Amino acid sequence: MSENGAITVEIKNNIGTIEFHHPKGNSLPSDLLRELANKITEVGNNANAHVIVLRSKGDGAFCGGASFDELVAIDNADEGKRFFMGFALVLNAMRNCPKLIIVRVQGKAVGGAVGVAAAGDYTIAHESSSVKLSELALGIGPFVVGPAVQRKIGSSAFSTLSIDASNWYSAEWAREKGLYAKVLNTQEELDRSVDELAHNLANSSPTAMKELKTVLWKSTDHWDSQLEQRAEISGKLVLSDYTKNFIAEFKNK
Image 1 (cartoon, one colour):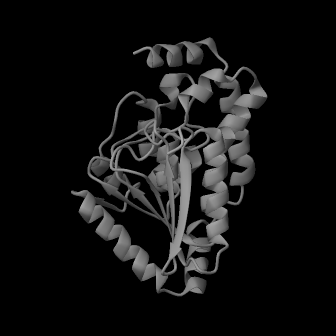
Image 2 (cartoon, helix red, strand yellow):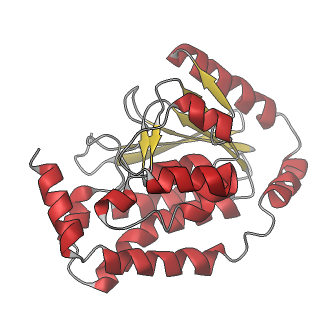
């Protein structure tokens, strides 16, 4: 497995499975995020895939969010914006995808990963899949993923996650707030639930599901420009001494 991570795609029985992996907690560097966005778009346009399952590899963390190594290396606003546009591209690819997307969350989700879970049309999680929006603690803020998370769990719960940026919230809390549709006790139950739903949708009407997707994502057409503006804000904030010092201290722990 590459030290830079990898993304694999399989289309079988009308189910398109997209899996990402990175050796550092399934974190997502910029290049991997862009590849992921492209794969979501490609599979979404493939007539052989009636539904998409988005997952990460292994039974550990679902996704550690953005790459700290990349984050600390940013030295100008343009680089900062490009970095944060990675998650913006993934979220917009999920939103614009004409296929319903099931997200399988087998472990902890932090930062941008919470946005990916929120952008799923149906997200199923393991009981260990606690969530944290850590951006404010870094001196930034969950600006790019904010619209996706707020759309799914509402303003009050989004405020809770955004402000209490140092603490984890349980998978059951996330289910109660609507981020997760289901929370399962074992990895076997998680996989069974994902497989059953994917199978059912793979045998449903692609036209009907496309129309449902349009209804579910009503009033989000402004996201292309909004998420780019949010990426620009984050790209400037990441240059602060506060953020640089925080990441340096975190990496030295």
